[in-house]
Amino acid sequence: MKLSGVMPALVTPFDAKGQIDFKAFERLMVHLREAGVTGWVPNGSTGEYFSQSTEERRDVLQFVKDFAKPGEILIAGTNAPATREVIEQTAIAKQIGYDTVLLAPPFYTRPSQAELIKHYETVLAAVDVDLVLYSYPAKDGSDISFELMDHFADNPRVIAIKESSGVLQRAIDIASRYEGKIQLVSGSDDIALDFMFWGAESWICGPSNCMAKACCDLDRAYRSGDLGKARQMMKTLYRAMNILESGKFVQKIKYGCELQGLPVGECRGPLGLLTAEEKAEFRAAMQPILNW
Image 1 (cartoon, rainbow, N blue to C red):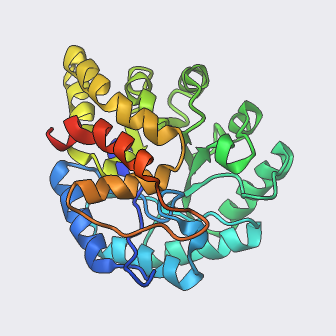
Image 2 (image 1 turned 90 degrees about the vertical axis):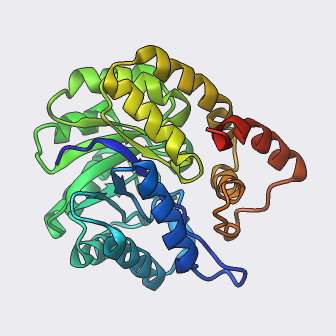
């Protein structure tokens, strides 16, 4: 499957009682579709999958699948700490109708590269899905090495890597080494334009929840060949993107949705509330995006 365009790493809206708010979810996704996103990535780290029960994860996947139109890309986050549980979550996604999953290294366990290779092989053997690797070492505590990518480079079911290390040199190396084999997916939002330049044709984008039109316009400007316009857009987006990358990522994205008139509730613990100062800083950076 060829990945392209902006695919939001969806937040999961919660109501005042902390339950999933599917009405708010639908309002958000209608807004994102109108902005021009190309698909949906539920139950990733931006979606707070770590705080959800298996039943809640199933309900989110089913809701997004039911909302999606033919031709829209669907990628399910099915991460968990143990291989057995990842297989269970992936089998649920497959049953609902997801043919592609996004998998970071299992959190908490910090597997070696040999263990991680075995983990991915075991999941692929157990469930007939394609795999998008997810490199986010700052959050997962484990890297996805070139040794691992070399191992899977000729496996047609390992189709891409969402690269969220924030290291541009690594993204360039991935694009150079695995061209035609493993697609490079932008996952470092404040250098998204650099990723595009180096061959990333898709962007699994948490910030698009609260700045969808701006992100889609940036993607469209680059694709049209208007690099000057794309550069100016990235300059406008950069401050807000950089603040997101500085910490409390999900809380700020949810606050950004509120600023857009699309409230999605607070995060579940242990993620805490933003301070007044943090809100003010992000609100100021969002102003040109709100007026996009």
